[in-house]
Structures are given as C-alpha cells and as structure tokens.
Image (cartoon, rainbow, N blue to C red; front, side):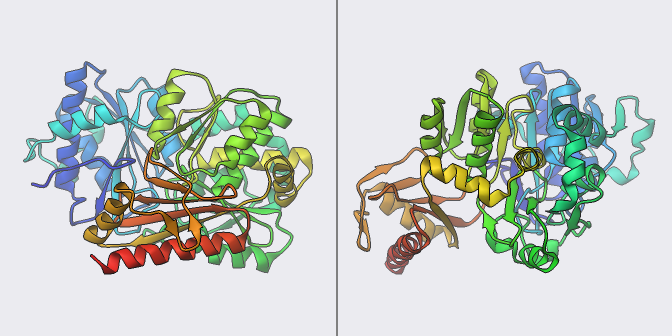
Length: 472
C-alpha cells in the first residue's frame, strides 16, 4: 500500500486510483491511533460535500471509527467545510473530518481534518497521523453491510442549521435579505448552494445544482473559471455584484455587476477597510506570503500590526489560536474574521461584502476606489503552469541557487524566500514563483501598478521559465 501524505490542506488524490475506500479506511485508522496516543476524547464529526461518492467515503470513515469504539456524528446532508469546522468546535470532538477536494478537478476527492477549535489541523498532528496509518486495513471497510442506526455511538445530525443560527446572530439579515435581489451567487456546483438558497431565496442563483463533474471546470473561484458567470451577469444586467464560492465554500470569489473579476487581494483590502473604517474595529492582520504588499500599506495607514506567514491557511489559523486576530486572508480566497471560527469561510466573507455595500449604499467599484485612495491602484496576475516534476524542480533549483538576476528588462532588487521565491523589482512590483503543494503545478504571481506593466512582467517571467525548461 502507498504512503498517504497530507498536503497544504489535507490529503487529496484521484478517485478510484489513490482515493479509494481502502485508503480512506487506512487513514481513518491513523486518526484513531492519534486520538489514543494524544488522549483526545473519542468523538469525531464527519461532513462531505457534492463530490462523487462523498457520502460513501464519509460512511467508510464512520464505519472504521465505530469499529474502533469512537463516537461518530455524521452530517445528514452535503455541507460546507466551515459548517463542519463549526461543528468540530461546538460538539466537543477530538477533530472533524471533511470529505472534500475543495477546488481540485472533479476526478479528485480528499480528506480534510479540523481541530476541536474549528481550525485546520497543523503539521505535527498530521505527521503523527501519517506515521500511524497501517499498511493494511485491520477493520472491515465496506459500509454497505453495516446498519449505522443500530449502533449506539452513531448519530446523524443537521450541521447546516447551527451554521445558519450563527449567521443570524452575526449579521443584520433583515437588511441583507431586503438587498438580496441585487446580487447573484455562483456555487460552482459546490455545497455552498444549499445554505445560500435557504438564506436568500430572492438572490439569483447560478450553478446551484449538484453536478459532481463540475461541467469540466475546477470549482476554484478564479477568473479563468468564471467566464460563464460573467456572461450571466452581463446578460441579466442590474446586478450589483456576483458572489462566488468554491467546491466546499471555504473560499470566496467576486465579480462586479459588469462581469469583471475582482481578485482576492482587492477583497482582503475591502474587508479590512470595512472592519476598521466603518465598523471601528482594531486588531492584528495575518496574511500569506503571496498576498500583495498593498495590504501591508493599508495596515500601516490604519496603525494595525500585520504578520506574514507561509501559504496554507493552517499557518494563519495557528496565529489565530494564540492571539486575537481581526482578519486573516490569503491569495487563494480563503479568509477569516474575529468572532467566527479560525478557518476560511467564503459565505461569511460574502455576507460581509453584502453588508458593506448595503450599509454604505455604494457599489463594489466605488468601494475599491476608496481603497485606492489610501494605498494606490494595483494589478495582480497569476499563471498556473502544468509541468512535469523534473521541469518544476529544475525551475525551483535555479531559484534556490540565486540564478535569477532579472526577468527581461526587469532587474531583481531583492529576494524573499519565506515560502517560494518572491523577486522584488522596482516601483513596488514583484514576481513570485512557487510550486503547488497539492498539484503538479508551478504558480507564477505578479504585482504591478498597471495592467500593461503586470502583463509585461508576467511575459518576461514565463519566458525565463520556458528557457530554463528547455535546458532540462
């Protein structure tokens, strides 16, 4: 049996190849071993989203846990990852298991672990679980012959309603429902569709059906995956903005009413601006290494401390566990705020944006101009290159050896290597190169002052990478 290894956010693999009932059962046995070794309460909550065979894999986890004497709380429906995280915190569990591959293609499923505090499980615990995964199953893993309801330690519960109750307590829902018809929401066929339909029946709902194929598009809320939603917004007109969440609804995407994509960096700036300037909040901001430097500028403007961490929300969450944090966010669209769980929540962020617009009476582009007035305009671009492992490692090795002095005419002024390679150029612009932790992908990021400059820098970076690959 192959080794099961956690990536940046859980274990993800191709269904029926590596992600099988047998391997899910093996990983669950490792989880049980961790509970016993660390002395945690033997209670686990399990959720699953809209991906293929999600319920089957969730029941596999439940079967193994029950055979090992662990109390099991299983969601009675498809849920979002933040719902599962909230339940892990509030139900006195050792951990929460979420069956999801988040934004990965439809051929993948995955196994995310949440702590009893509601955040992503950290590295040391995951390493322990990996080390305790057996080579062969010691427990029968076929859930079809097992009557869960006859087992005294099994409960099937509604995880959606407690999440809605938390939303009702945190937001002015009367105001938001009154304004809901001005917005459109794209679930990308993910599990956010159910709660958003329930909260806002008058909102326009797009790709809000269950389709495990995702119609061939990875459910990641980035520009290249949202062409259909953009056309939908333009066709319908009179929409203030479009809100998007990924497959398990822990990430947010945004479009203005004209179908133009608004990247996650602008969303982070908007939310910090709203929390501080309009809500009167203060506190520390945590962000990942790939976030634009404009967020630092905004924190300086408002006198807020800011900490930059490695990419992967578990690093931001670790800070949130130790001290009060106003806001945490990363380039991938994962964001969290004080007063909620120490975990990303795309729907919670969408409601904050709706509240911002409803209470100010301003559209998203007007609010972006408010931010630009404080930190200046900027453009961010990202390009994901599908490369073989050899070619990806060749590029990384050259970066490690300091072999990159310029990208075309753009001279490198300094290099940061917290998590990847960030090449600082002139005029507050930079290029970052980083291999993905979960996919055969090399990511290239660019920050610049204008679209033309960003395009020029990206072109130079891709040319440099292509030349390196030709030598491999």
